[in-house]
Length: 164
Image 1 (spheres, helix red, strand yellow):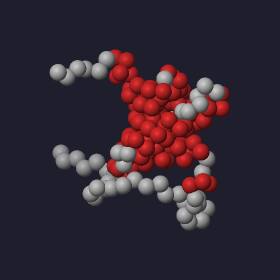
Image 2: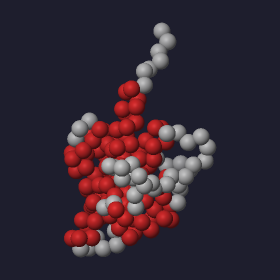
Image 3: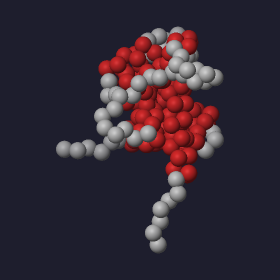
Image 4: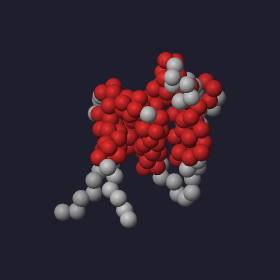
């Protein structure tokens, strides 16, 4: 028997879509404010939010650079000034979380994604711990924005082939 999701289960994905829509239309802050309640609601809702954002980031990456077969998403860090390889330890911790979580989820390594989230959310009872969690999720949101924006821009630049 197939059951329909309850309205409460349908709301978070709609919130994420609205947040990303606002962001690519110039209101990233307003979109981010929409997802904050999902971060604060519970660990389960926050993890689900991370999954939705990583999926959005992965979807954008796949449409921009479609894999020709089975593929693996890897974390590649480059120095923005030189273009040469850099070390992941040079990145802020929130960005490292976002990149590693997205790569794990994109590679269907759900255990690693869960472990990364659990480490990030380990001490949310403290202000510093909650700040780390919010920063990590917002970095993930930024990644989803970047790939979604790039996808939208690519679609706008691709002429529609209409046959009248």
